[in-house]
Amino acid sequence: MSTNLTDPIFHDKDKARAHFEAIRWPDGKPICPHCGVIGQATLVHGKSHRSGMYQCNGCLKPFTAMIGTVMESSHLPMTKWALAFHLMASSKKGYSAHQLMRTLGLGSYRTAWFMVHRIREAMRSSDLAPMGGAGSTVEADETFIGRKGGSIKRRGHGHKNAVLSLVDRNSKQARSFHVEGTSAADIIPIIKANVAKETAMMTDEGGHYFTLGDHFASHESVSHKDDEYVRGDVTTNTVEGFFGIFKRGMKGVYQHCGENHLQAYLNEFDFRYSNRVALGVNDTERAHRAIKGAQGKRLTYQRPRSAQSARAV
Image 1 (cartoon, one colour):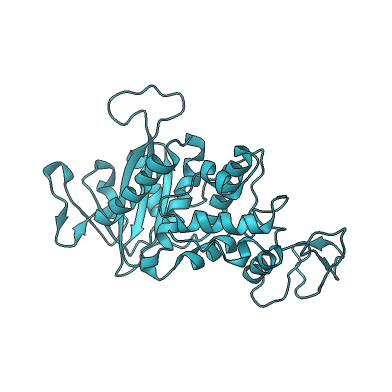
Image 2: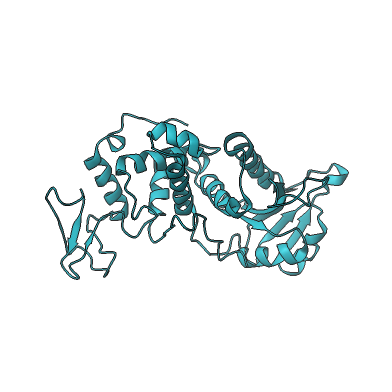
């Protein structure tokens, strides 16, 4: 991770405001979040108004580039939001709320914690289009992390939270879900809802995957219990590589995640994996995409968790 802390958007409130406005309204025409009128707003000047306040000439209501985003109602300056988005987007394994509190000089951990959850909500993909398609391959696998609320630690994975991840080898996109368990009833409906039926599926030998061939173009598997990890182009190494990044971040940076917030963390890791340097997306562009994703989403302090994706049926 490399962050140019001398960038004016991290220090100059006017530069930061212009930065957010350029991402929100790339054609330079403010759009009223109240009535939807385009380019019919006047910038309001005066000490009694917040910097960047516009008044719509249609409905006469005031707004800023923050209204209608996860940053709405925030009293933090845009300079701090700009740096927070950049740090969260550019750190491969995540950026903890404690570290963000120290870096931004925030007054409390609760403020930093709510801030990173808002950014995770901005990172949540709204793309419901099926992954894969004709000629494409999607790998599916599950892993376990943390401990279910109230569970007593015991041998096996019964006390841990289950995660299902899908990685498209062709588009290099990842989608992950916090699932109740690893039975076919838990896994197959999610895969069917998120992968095009023309796709070639690759999994391990898990019994819950046996019926995938009935729903997709093909289904091949490797047998990890027999020490088989690659057979020709049949492998789950791609999705396991994603799990490696996810677990290093969860254990090394975040250390603990409550079950009710797990999906939000998965959204964060999916976002960075699907917008990484290997795909031509540098740190600056990744932060821009996260800010763009903040539009049309809200997260209140009373409900600081990302909504479960509609893709997880």
